Image 1 (cartoon, rainbow, N blue to C red):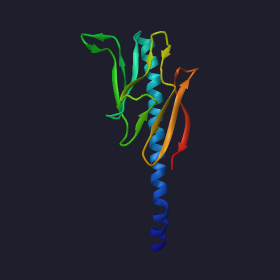
Image 2 (image 1 turned 45 degrees about the vertical axis):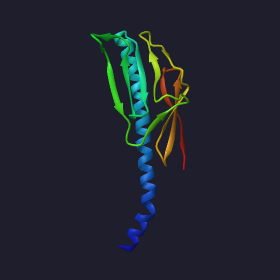
Image 3 (image 1 turned 90 degrees about the vertical axis):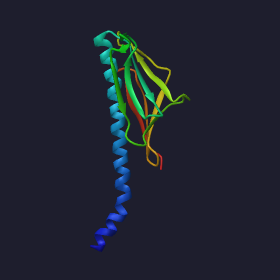
Image 4 (image 1 turned 90 degrees about the horizontal axis):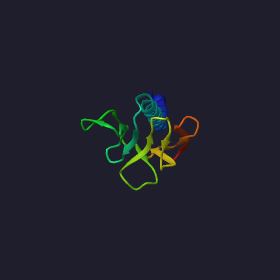
Amino acid sequence: MTLLCTLLAIAAPSLMKFGKAVQLKDSARDLIAVSKLAREIAMSKSITLTLWTNQIEHTYGITSLESDDSNPLVSFTYSLPQQQEISSITASDTFIIATYFPDGSFESSIQQLQLSQPQSDTIQLDWDPLQLCLRLDVFKDSI
């Protein structure tokens, strides 16, 4: 029993860090999927969509620029897990990551995003020129 407790005491920090890293990678994959979804919806519905993030509320989503009776035609909001943050070189708390157009093209003033979690890893995302969506660029250990 003592041996088991000792092994768990040694392994527990590594297991916690592994769990946070997996959660961070899942969040990055979710953000990539939402960027692909935004492009697909923009093309299929022939509308212009924005992919945005709010750093204060730890949310991101897609919203149409066109509206029907002052309500957006498309609006999805997703929450990041606790303590995860999306950041870029922009200084604002809420910013547009990209704008997707009905012809399948997009515009973005952001070259790279970082998805991070305190005392854990950082994931960098950049634009995939072939698929016109976000892609996983670098996964680095910040500890």
